[in-house]
Each structure stands twice: as C-alpha cells, then as structure tokens.
Length: 314
Image (cartoon, rainbow, N blue to C red; front, side, top):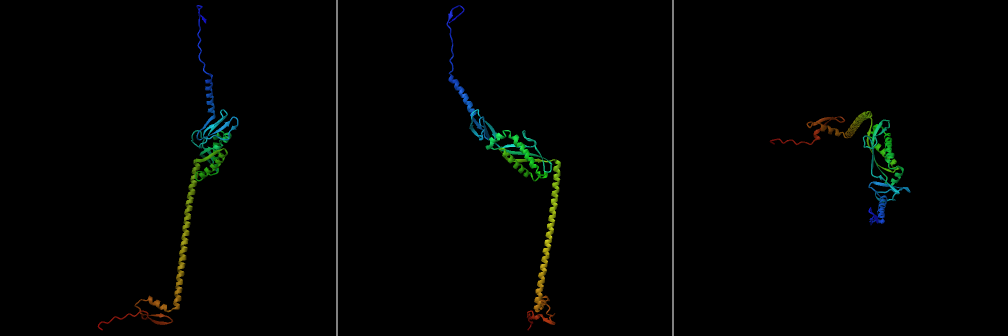
C-alpha cells in the first residue's frame, strides 16, 4: 500500500522476471571449455611436414609427429612444424630475394673465381627432434648457407683456373657434393644435389687462358703432323726393305735356277744341242756346234721327215 498526495492509500503492484536455470549456464561454459581442450589436444600435421613436440614437463619428445591427426596433452605439449619437402638454396649473382651473393673464391694459383651454386636438400624426418634441439628452425642461416659457401671455396682452391672452366667442372661438383653430404649428415640434413651453375674468372685471365689453349692446340696439330710424317717415312722404309728382299729372293731364285740348269746341261750335253736347235730358225737344217770338237748336227734327224709332194704326170 502507498499513499498519494491526497492522503489516500492505493495498492502497489510488483513485477518479477523468471530466472534462467543455473544448469544451462554451466552447460554453455562446459562446452566452451571442452572446445578449448579439444582444440589444444588435436594437432593436424600437413602433407610434407613433420611435427616436433615439446612438453613443458619432459622437454622435446624423441618421436616426431608425421603427417595426419595426432592427440597431444592440452596446454602442456607444444608442436613445432618443420618443412620436410625438398628445399633449394641458391648462392649466386642476381638471385631471388633471400639468397646470398655469388661465392668468391681463389683457384689453386691464386686467381679470383666467382661461382653460382644451387643446393637441393631436405631434412631427415626421423631426426627432426634432434635437429630441433641442436639447430632450431633457423638451420638455413646457421648451417646450410655457411657450409655451402665454405665447401665451394675449398673445392675451387684444389684446381687451376684453366681446368675449372674447361675439363674439371664435374670434378669440382663431385668434391663439393662429397664434403657437403658429410656436413649435412652430421646436422640431420640429407643432401640431394649440387648444381654448379656458373664459374666466372676475370676477362684478362680468360683471354690469356684461351691464347694458351690455342697455342697448345697448334702444337698438338704440328706434333700430329710430325708423327704422321714419321709413320709415312717408316712405311716407305719398310716397303723399300720389302722390295729389296723380294729382289734378292728373286735373284737368288734365278741363280739357283741357272745353277740347276747348268748342272743339267753338264750332265746331259745333248740338251745343249736340243736347246740350240729350238732357238734356230726352222729353215736351218744343219749347224756346227762345238762339243768336244767340231761336228755337224743334222737337224733333219731330229725332226720328222716331211713327205715329198707327188710329181704331176707320173
């Protein structure tokens, strides 16, 4: 009851709103907390990546998380992703942003050499936890680029400048590959390839090397010509010796033939008469030959008689 200005009392009216049940508030809060817990407990490792788990209780866990969905301890485990795909680092002139300048080195004789190199590698998935503990995510700057620069310089220093730009390019790549593979392996990285893109030397040195190579080629050509001339001369000598031996053999054969013929004539004097008769003209019928004295040889007795032609009219 309330009193108005006139002094009369009037009845009072009060309105009460219904209160929400407390269980609904607790339910909404529980859903929010559950969502947060699930979000912290579920980790998805994308394709091509590996996850390293750091526990606030035990430190870095030795077994990294591979691709897929994984459960971790909420608010205790923290997952760091590492790219396990093929990576490329290029050290060269005019490369993309983030790459270092070309590598400057010295050849075996002390000449300035500039090299552009591309290295392909990927991290060892099984040792990602060790890499995380020892190097961390900044391994490109702390290991990869400094080691590439150092090993390229070491390899170039083993060769002369002329060999570097001509015949020993593959040997340089092989030397860099071998040394980098060892260093990367110790740091839980796997080397895929080393591409020696370009080797540059001062222009004056390049001209001098070119002139030297041209002179060496000319000397080689002249040496080849001299060798061919010597071979031709030796061939001529061999042919002459062969011809001389053939002539000697022929003369020896003729001499032996004459010797045999002379012996036969001495043992058979009649062969002389027959030989002379064969050489004479058929028109000669009688000759005088010395054979232990002068005598007449009747050729008609050595040739068959020819019948006389018949006389006509008899």
